[in-house]
Length: 291
Image (spheres, rainbow, N blue to C red):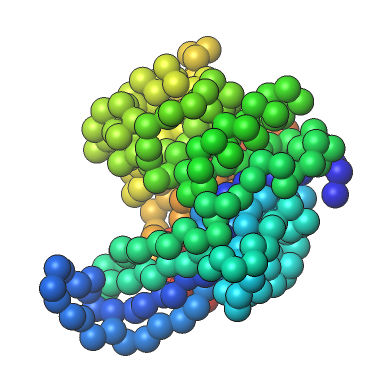
């Protein structure tokens, strides 16, 4: 897997327990759910699978525990055709996991336990594999020091780096200086200093403001669409496609993985955003059990 269209994703792998319930519980409340099902996820794993589904050769960097959850996560990457040679199995550590509760409105809340994800190391990815990549994708569910080390190495090889800054956190290293494309949602954009985002116009304003951090910024605004800006004056706004919402879970990861695959193939940012917007809309309009 050495073609330039390779997408390398470094990030989290979580075994998700999905709960279907009429609503999410308030503090001290017990809600009776209707059903539950397992799903392999984590932002890193989801984005790697999305990139592979979009047709890119994809490799994953991460860590799982030597347990049943870890074995299920590795098998899921295999089924998706994701190269997992750089995924470590940590003896004595629990795999990352989450519990997500989906309500009747299609929204969800989740609790994650990072587990083995926190032990991921940049040394797991060899230099040849990184140098052969078209895009390196990072998120904030592994330590920033790991992301920073990988982004610095990618910069030396001329590999474009995309950071999905989710969950949002202040930069404590030189990571931002080596990120080419920053992708955030409305909440994350505000937390990083882009201002409140309550529509597509505000999303574009936030993208412009956040170019002080990274050269190109993409702000997803949920049902309003997506906006992007760069330091050269590019400004894009793409309205959301009209759909009936079935579940918003995983939409951001599908967007990022699809965008990474498009950029790795040499597509323009506008074309990549259009493809990612369409894939996110398809996912959001598809019930969980049919995905």
